Length: 115
Image (cartoon, rainbow, N blue to C red; front, side):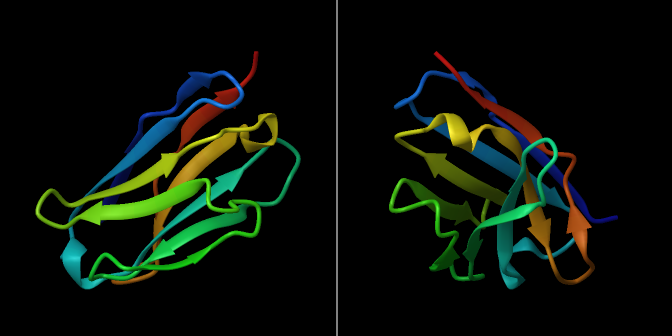
C-alpha cells in the first residue's frame, strides 16, 4: 500500500516560516520523483515543487520566487517543503504527490497565513 502522510501545517504570521513534511511508505521512496501541490478553497490545485530521486530540485511554481525549498531524506522516506517569507496568498492545503509506482496523494496539511 502506497501511503503519503503530510504534517507540519499550521498558523503563521506573514513573513514567517514553516516546514512541511511528507512521510512515505509502501514503495521504494528513493527511486521516484516527488511533488508538492497546494489548493485553496474555490481554486484549482496548483503545482508547488518537484524533486528528483537524487534529491536535486527540478522545478518550482512561479509564485515561489525563491521562498520555498523542496528537499528529501531518502533514509527516512520523507519529503520536505521549507517555506519562508510566507504571504497571505500562500494559505492553502498542501499535498505531497507521487506519480509512480502509482499515482498517489496524501490527505494534505493546512497552512494558514494571517496576522
